[in-house]
Length: 418
Image (cartoon, rainbow, N blue to C red; front, side):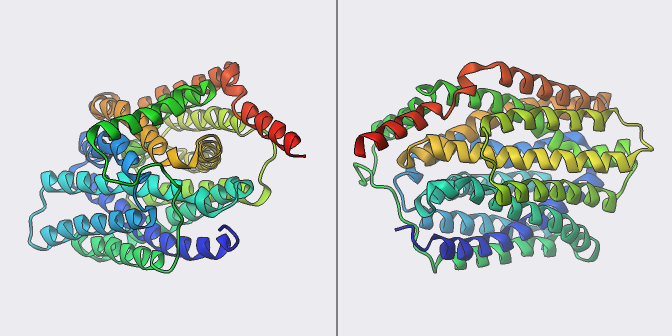
């Protein structure tokens, strides 16, 4: 079934690559437009909440259905729905209705589509590729995302300088059409489940509990979720406020904002490339712990820097991007290795919701705090907290043993067969 997995990945990732670049360009163009038009951390925070909260709320239930539905069709429908929401925004701008309320609403609906697309895509990977290649694929996937993070902001800054925001939004629609088209030519197998019929609420709830048990029964996996959730809680406000740090603290403009976004992408490209090429044999958990420390230091130092040292900020952003890429690749691979294929959709969705819901609550306060006290102080405080989490992760024995039990069981089974 997985004999021709490379051809499938080439087809899928070609479409996703175009879609990622167009989405990155449009997302950054929206950030520039909001930053310049409103110059408010609260506006950026509310837009981030609108883009995350709906997905976080429906994510666990979406995961249950992802594990029951055809994953290829789920990805295609989710992409189409997101494109339709973008089209509504574009038409509203053409008609002169530049309403923040409408932007928040459409970002929220796009979030609903993403709640189905991302878990379906991650859950489909182990059904196509052999397990021995999962970390390398995660690295390649991270590299593709990184290239889009480099090209997207540059394209977005150029587009918003030459076109109206309504025209820029059309780029995202074109990318979605190409992504959906690429999926038409591949077959993605689905795991066998006991029941494919329409699920009652009781059955959905039971399936959701099965996803929770998959996490809580594995102490190492549970601690990985806990630490990652706290780190996400610290990172998301920083990610939302990066443009304002460039504008307000380092006194930059559109192109300085795009440079920082691109340098983050350069760092992620390097990190994903290293994982994809070298496929490190040592513990992925130790790598994750190291990335917490490195990422936290890069963010804290960025807030500490004086306004005249923008070039050092650029360098720290590259380092942070490398750490983030290595973390993402290792984290996704650990989940794909530890979780049963038929439960992957709901586990990915559960993680997203568990990590994002507290973050949304935090964003409500950080937007106000950034406007009141300064964005750079938030970078210093939250970056330092991430470093502390990294140190605690190294001291957690259950987390350090994650993966060993599975390997021991597989080795025993292999011995019995021989």
